[in-house]
Image (cartoon, rainbow, N blue to C red; front, side, top):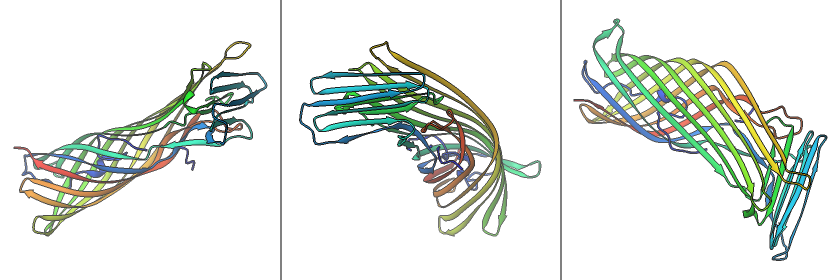
Length: 389
């Protein structure tokens, strides 16, 4: 399975992808009462990576103030290359369309930048979104008599999680167009003459219900649950670089959006440890359908003696498939009073199918597209649950 999919951020939810896995276990209210849970903590996800740029900057032993550079562009259709020089500064750009191979190298004093994009030069940078925080909440109601003779409680939740990562590999930008027809290389020395920004964001927004049936077994409470859910999944990647001295620029972006509908079953338990403390446990499993659409775009500009070289490209992709979801949670709960609890928990969630953008990094690659991989999310946090007046 490809690992080309989503690092950090602050979130509003119960988990990275599986908010419902951190549900309250038990109820602090009497039948006919309403209770509320709020929680927060840290999460870390084993998520795929997305290609961002090609090329790198290096430090060399040069003469302060001296500048040098070279740029080349080879292609079957069109090519453009140019250089801009100022005291102690040099920027070079190259762009090619049709079986592209481009290269740019710039050096100034003790800095140099080299970018190569082509059949023999495909060393790519990748960026991953994998950790951050989470917060969230749930509202529950305890029935005076079991609904349909089975359901003791119902909970509704809305959650949101978000993580992001960024890089600024200034001085060198190498990109393939999303249709893999063109390529651009820009190099600058000093590296500040080419500002490169790379960002990646992953957000998941979830809504759902939990229908729960509580059973008392000795001093312990065991709960069975059925939990329909909806998740809105959004992944975006942005790469852009602008060299004002040369009026050259390159950008590439991807937007992957999914609607996930599913249902899972859960079993939960709470048992007294002594005094105000209890031990908690939960396990869940379910199935879901995921409908994904993606859009990819790129834009390259390099001026040359024969006119400005411009290449814009757009690609779209879509996919529908099914997946399964697993979750587990364990922790300790402290009874602040008869109607309020404070819990410290650790949890894990697993989704077998989550989408990602796959962008061209080699000459033989297909145009930009969607790929799927699994996602494993670990969380540790605290939860406060209390009955309303």
